[in-house]
Length: 150
Image (cartoon, rainbow, N blue to C red; front, side):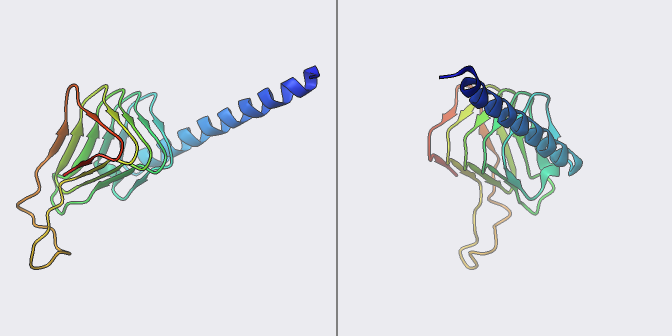
């Protein structure tokens, strides 16, 4: 293999890493403009959140693509807090009407679901305000692939 043929893949990979770094910077900037608190050194993929002002993401966190942060309660106390150096795998959904807190140095595998949603049995489309309780993932907790915590 010639020297030029070896340099081309390295150059392409270097350019792609820079594009990813730039996309991450833009994503974090836009989330901060919309009110999210995000610590230094965070890596955030293509995530979805309707209310970024209710999200607090610690420094050195890594949220992969398709993570959904949904603090969606009608109460002013709903919110999501992710501690420092926490990894959240792709396609994980955090759907809370009250509070969700995950401590520092935690690992959440891909495709997990965290929800505190409780619905009124007479009208399943209406959440019941008095039953939502905070979710907290604390020390030594790890959520395995496709875990469902409700």
